[in-house]
Length: 456
Image 1 (cartoon, rainbow, N blue to C red):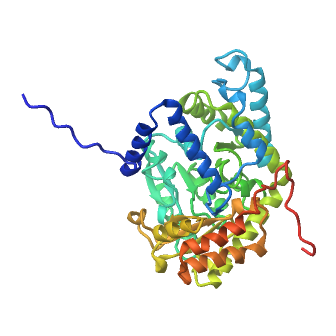
Image 2 (cartoon, helix red, strand yellow):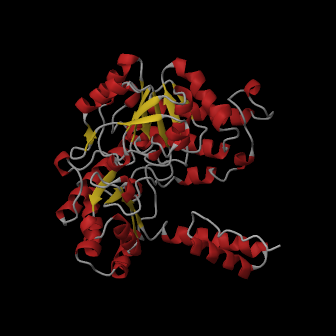
Image 3 (cartoon, one colour):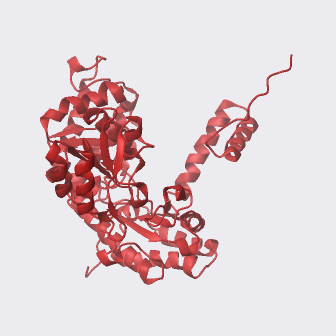
């Protein structure tokens, strides 16, 4: 009997890189040397991305020294299944963990001026799944923003909303103004009568009409859900809209973006009637033990935000506007010029004429400038791999102490690579010279506020 023919391996990852990893492990031989390869890769990333690059990723934020220390704290080895309190825990000996988690809860409430907060989920995508678990049933209709206009997959068919078995209707969006088309939305919403209207944007430049949209949904008892993954810090810092006070039932967020904390999902609400369904969706449905070191780090991040958040977020917005203007002036088209480009941490450039988002992001990375490809309204969903846009964020450069006057220098680097077509390696030397002196993070208790130049 012939041997069965094995099918070729199917893998979503880059097969060449996996093959390289296997070869490295084979050559290392001993497990201790294998571990050394991991440590070496981590250090290489720290040396390059952490010290020699201009990091302009909108979903990334550097954490303060204290937050980084807490992420490796002893408390992270401890299990704390359940809600806060001895009776609520499965394990004994959690009195100090209860203290940490109580402090985190109350700090988040103060930072966001809300009545209820939960901190247990690892990311905002899981936070969105918790909201869909709590506020919808399979087969319900929701409305959310489609992806070419900035909508995120967590609120679409290929994310938690689809996993929940929801029927998804598009929120009409103006491709020029980059805003909800309120008249078209009202017509579509009254026809579909969604149980939940979800606004979650990975391309987020301006506040959205939450009050008007939630008022329409309220006509038939629908609720409004604001996915503030990117905007959480801006919201807490008073530099964006306040969704919970504009009609949103629930606000989710990511602590690892503008909030500048550890990778964490945050869920916030005011209505006590939502407490049971939301928290039961979190535990026991989506989480058991929940990385208490991360919770401690999140708590300190919230305390940092109470002290520095308003100034920090205001400077992020100023830097975004200054960088967008400088790029546009150098021949790199930036979206929403007529609206002042942005009111957030993001700048979106249309780089189709330079080869598209994938090509441009890769070329800039060779010059130690880190960005990401991004869909823009002219793209189709199938352009995901090779979109026309480039997304640029100002979180990290702001925490390094840079101000508006530094943005033209960064725009010059873009111009040299894209417009003047200099070799990336020649630009890289100047990028490293610019970045090397910038090694301290500000807006934190260790280093305080950035030094201010005389006359500023």
